[in-house]
Image (cartoon, rainbow, N blue to C red; front, side):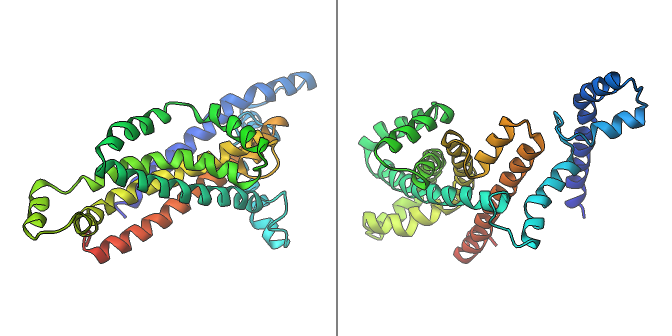
Length: 291
């Protein structure tokens, strides 16, 4: 209870501020409509109107929740879970690109980290490049990747996966380099007294020591991969995916649709990070790193 109460307090405060902000941001439309109709709104009527507009500037939580249910649970009950109007369908499109990009980015990040730790030339050249690569905004790179790959006949899942991989590989590189270098001098000297080879040092000391760092970076990389997949969907003409859903909502001023897609993306990211956390706890417990 001591852990849940602070969380509930913060969530309640966010909801209070959210509803209050909705009144301030949506009241202009309500007052304009009332003025045109020659009606004077009371405070209660004004609040009720700002919390129930079809296209509000800021949707309130119950509107977002209703839209989420309408495009997920209600679709499932109707047997239309994979309809193009369903967030489950769009979520699956985004999830597939996210997972593929995450696998590519994680694999590349681990290989680069191993090379950086064991090769001085890679340490001096690849690591600065990896850092510099993240200074370029992904919104500037994504359209170029989509256009270039489309020109050579690569369409659909792969371009979005490459954008996800571009964002997800960096935290894995940094985390794995830090983890592989985490063993101190005494541990390395101890293995030398055992005449351990370089491979034995890597597999028996460096790699196990890097696991906590790896899982932390995987959580960041997964969230980054999801962002990359959503950004990659924006230049595709708003066809499928959560990013396309947000873009379509912006075209037609459907702010509730935009916010529901944002929350769906947040729920998806939290679920993926939570799965990695569960795997982390089990693996580290078996390794004896955590009780």
